Length: 254
Image (cartoon, rainbow, N blue to C red; front, side, top):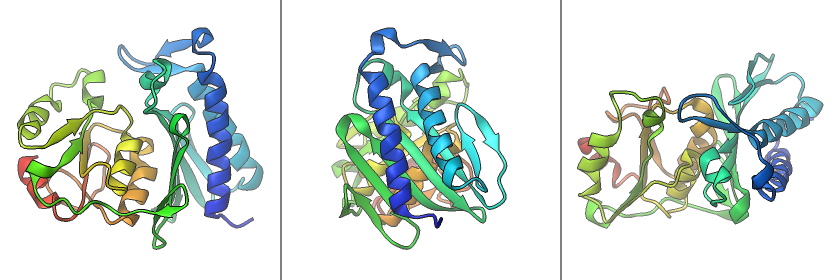
C-alpha cells in the first residue's frame, strides 16, 4: 500500500473520533502526572494506541515515535505522533487541542496532518504539493510590520521549571505587536500561521512530535521556519515560524 494523504487523513479522522468520545466523558477521565506540571490522560494513551494500530496494520515496515509510547525503529521511515497536543486544554473542555501526525521518510519530514476535532478543522500537507485546510488551499498572511501582527507563543519551558524560559522574550515582543495569543497547542499555532490566522509563532523547549506535522503544513503554505537566530530549523528546542515579510523583524527581537 502506497503512503498517501488520503490514508493520513483517514487515520487522523479515526483518531479524532476516538478523542471526541473521551471528550464527552471528561468527568470520568483518569489523569496522571508525567511531571509536576505535565499531564497525561487516558485519552492521550487511547488515541495514540488507535493511531499506532491503524498504521501497523497497513504499514508495518514504518517506525513510530509517539509522545506516550516512545519510539519504535522501522525499516523505511517513521510516524511522528502527538495524540493530543494541548492535553491541559482537552481536560478543561476547551477547544484548542489537536492530533498531530507527521510522516518522515529518509530523515525528511514529507507529510503532515493536524486535526482539531472540537473545531472539526483539518490541516494537511505534503512536501512540494501545498497545504490545505478542510480541502481548500491556504497561504500565510502578508502582514509586514510588527504593529499590525498577531503572534502566538507558549510556555513549555515553564512546565519543566527551566531557568532559561520564555518570559523575558514574551514581555519584550508582546509590547511591539497588535496582539499576542497563547492557545496551548503548538501544532495549532503552526497551522494558524499557515492559513493567516496568525502572522507568527515562536516557542522553546518543545519536542519533535509537538511541531513536526505543523512545520510541514506551515512551510507548504509559504512560512519561513528557523531557530531564534534565523538559521534553518534543526531542533525543537527553538522554533520561529512566520510569513516571509515579518520574519526578519521577529528574529531581531528573539
